[in-house]
Amino acid sequence: MNSLLQFLGPHSLLGRYGYLGIFSIIFLESMGLPLPGETTLVVASGLTASGTFHPLSVWATAVAAATTGDNIAYVIGKKGGRPLVLHHGGRVGITHERLNHAERIMARRGWLVVFLARFFPLLRQLNGLAAGTTGMHWRTFLLANASGAIVWAGLWTYLGDWLGAHLRVIPWAFHHVGLLAVILLPVIGILAILGCDTRCNFSPHIPRAVKIRVPVRARMSEVASRSG
Image 1 (cartoon, rainbow, N blue to C red):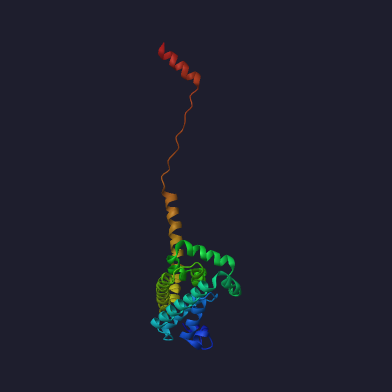
Image 2 (image 1 turned 180 degrees about the vertical axis):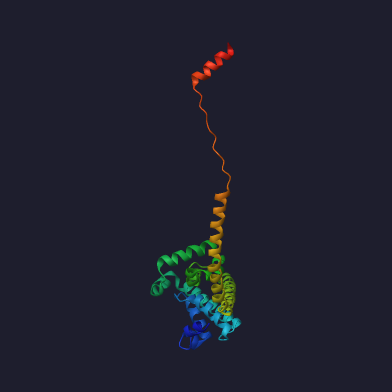
């Protein structure tokens, strides 16, 4: 936890701006910028164990940022269309191929893609833009997007909070599991070797069947003498 706090200390974005930093990163990623929104959410949730943030506040900030950013991106895609998105999106990695891919997925599954989009990097970045350019109804998008943001933020906030609380337990467990493996593996190996030697030494010897070959002429003469 101490190393994590040093990494995100007072000179970092989260250290300086707190919840505003969380909101800004997730908000801008939702509008199409290639930023680590999900990583920010997990790290901020991990810092709740030290009292830096509160889990419910982190969750609410992430939901608000994701929903707001996606809806603004939806309006941009709806009003500006593909030409505007591609003209300015190239500066932040939104290419013609990536937008086409997102639009194809959006056209096939609709609201389900919007709901699950936050769990996939490409769709998380282009979710609102693609929904706007494909002409999805705003109420459908809003409901699916808000529901997905609630589930996404809740899941990662819970996992990040759990990880932050057990950060000291995990290295301890790995250390003791490794120590146990160092002790048990040689013992298991010795027992396996002894078991193999015991089976090899005390296994009963079964001789192979001996084939006795009788000449053909001898058989014929024996048959003739019996018949006679």
